[in-house]
Length: 185
Image 1 (tube, rainbow, N blue to C red):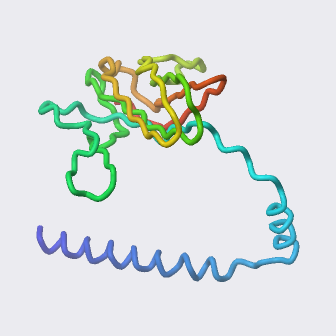
Image 2 (cartoon, rainbow, N blue to C red):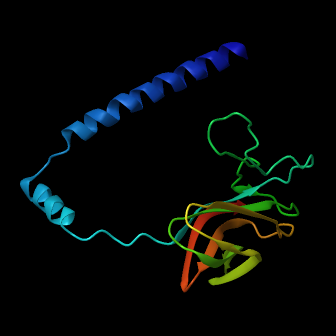
């Protein structure tokens, strides 16, 4: 078994190296036209898009920690940066199992009240069905804050197939969200 593992590892390392060498070669062969450069200059003259007041960074589903140690904010002392410890995000969710949903967001330039929510939805027979959802928290914020809100969901129903996990942030008159695809089994 060790011989097979070494061969498989060696093969994967060679494949990875080949891919890493191929990408720059293919990029180097891409033609650059005068028209593309002209369009790029025109785009640089445009007014930049407005910066959203707040944006959700990501939404995850993770296993519930029976020891209660994660999620944790700044759980790595002496790291030199603010950090976040989460259960490893999973994309395959097993029916009958509960998960903890995390929504992480950053406040760019908004001061006021906002609400965070999550939703797990699936298309069944052409119709979108909400399998789990919840409002995580309504809170006040100001620029420069980074937030994480977590909630424990209901057990996953026996509904195999793809589903969408959405983290939504409402602030002022704006609603923004981030989504990830998960697989229910």
